[in-house]
Length: 74
Image (spheres, rainbow, N blue to C red):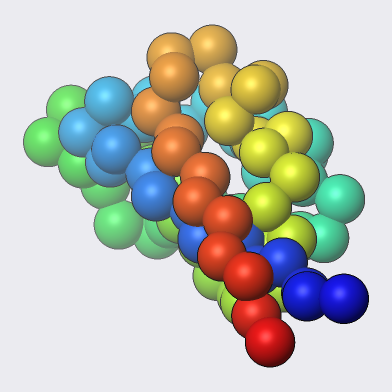
């Protein structure tokens, strides 16, 4: 059975740093960055590789800033 690995892409310029995606992730894959975007918000970013591609973060994001890709690992 193939294992699924997820990759999270955040549109840094659209992210308001609301932290909803961070709290919705069951594996603690996301964190708010210490850096800010052009609007002055700390944006969300992927900080570890434990993502399973469940897409909870993308579903919960109020601004649709997150895209989740799933890749099969063999």
